Length: 152
Image (cartoon, rainbow, N blue to C red):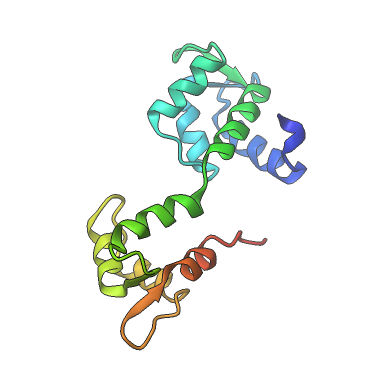
């Protein structure tokens, strides 16, 4: 699977992996897998991590090498689609399915549900939104703007 990753991705993954390779043996504890993956921007659930370990026949008390880690990261990246996840959440707010949502309702959801954002974090996100004069945003445009890959 490493052939599908860029050299920059592999280098970034190796750097983070090495931080958790406490014995300098080129391996990390399976119990650290979720932490390392999340440090690299992936969002696996504990259940997804367990499935990855099961797929590779690795016990939770065992260790995994970097090659296995690359395979797991690649598989995780393939199943995550932040745009679709956000689109699904926005569609739940957009009960009339018109493609628009009130900023006030989006702000309420972001500050009171799930991984709650602070008011400042919501303000930063909303800077990317084109808020209409009636206080609504077209969420497809908003999703595209907030999921643009960050360039170095």
